[in-house]
Image (cartoon, rainbow, N blue to C red; front, top):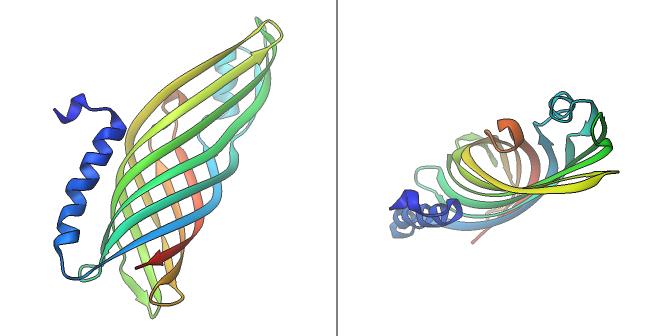
Length: 202
């Protein structure tokens, strides 16, 4: 039955199942966060040139952002988290022997459910290791002198993350993190995002 659900629906269901034990525990802390940074698309100029049969130059980096919420299990230094990501856009131009000059743009967003550990490194400083599942939406467009075309697609898979958490107080922290999304885009390329985020605990 789980396989019959859409990827996003599966993530919501898995979130409820995973978060259940956390809310039953005596020692937990819900939190929310907002971060921004640099997103990197794995689809590169060489892949683009092969696809259009000509030359291509892409800008694979753009400004990205994430919004997240979770439950921290204080006793075990663990967490369960749900996040929404906007990876900005990949853009570029090329020359195709069939289409002539072309402009290319791709945008991706994703939601992810992850679990993690926050080992203490020093007073007020923690490490952060996370792994989970994501569901991504892809919007791509090609414009040329002879016409335009667009494509909407989706993908899902494994995401990994790592970083540090600097605690300013019992309720506020700064999280510095890099996250990697496997097979998230065209030609089964990966996505990555490095962010600095403010985290507020309750």
